[in-house]
View 1 (cartoon, helix red, strand yellow):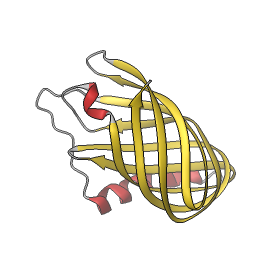
View 2 (tube, rainbow, N blue to C red; view 1 turned 120 degrees about the vertical axis):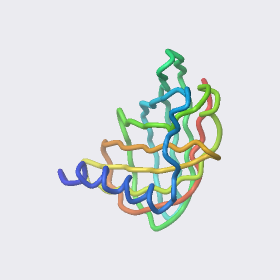
View 3 (cartoon, rainbow, N blue to C red; view 1 turned 45 degrees about the vertical axis):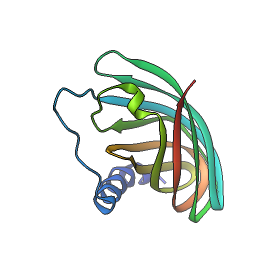
Length: 148
């Protein structure tokens, strides 16, 4: 199970290449990061809820609610604690709110790893987290971020 932590970065890179996610622009835009907790379940259908905090290079910060839904070849229960995400560069923190299209992989039995790549227009987000759960699979769906 310890190898799941090594699989996550590789899975994110593969997902980004497969989805053709754009690289971050450097034309005066801000860089933002997300720290999050997420809890959910899956049995072909995947659902999760959580919370997090977005912090940006221009000192903007906001607490957010997260909701994810989707489906695929996925089974189990998961909880990610202290997950981390990186957004592509944006002009304002408000550009990060809303619904994203996501693809993700997850695996675990006791310890669990979760990796997701997603996009919303020109904004992309890569997530990686570890936690606990008994789960395995890959799923596609939606990932929604809203301010609290």
